[in-house]
Length: 251
Image 1: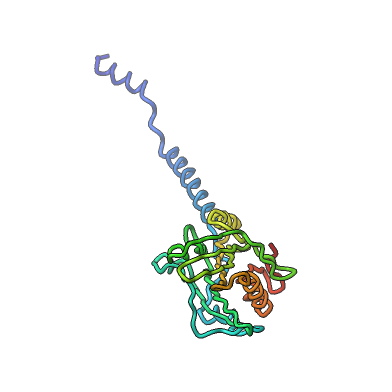
Image 2 (image 1 turned 90 degrees about the vertical axis):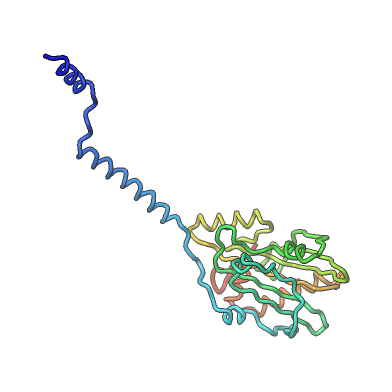
């Protein structure tokens, strides 16, 4: 045998056998199946919308223009969320009204709602809006807001001051059935609802009075109680996260 033949024989003996087409096909099928399974699992875990959007007319109709001793005024002095492209994405609806009662007390009322909260698109917290508008935040504390025997809301009481203007704000945020008191809690509430398989809805409910002194908080609490008493089941779901017409959120 020549040297060339010996070298060829040694190479053939020591080189690993090339994989057969059948083995390659089986491997590709297994890999493809695994990728499809992972994709299917990701799709199955992707949250879906829980609540449908509504028109502006439908949203505004949820909140009565007159109830109890309160009626709407033609103008408002509300501090609004910052105007930007992001702010436009945060809310599907922003309702702003000022109400006066028969005692002459005026409450500024704002409701900002989105039927879907996704990633970093979350409701604003008022203390941020007021600070951006030049107010000093002198008080910002949790407040247990008892609406009635069935509904108690974890809210926040904020006092904001600017030149010749002292404003007391009583507000809450709701993400699905959660009432977060901070940005961190909002993120956790979104995550919890995502794990249930849904995108949560979100709302900011805010009422405030100007230069009201010691009467500020009693006035605001009374306003919320009167409003709730005259709300429809659909409005109660928006405000408090009720799951059906007969049940409102109980904190």
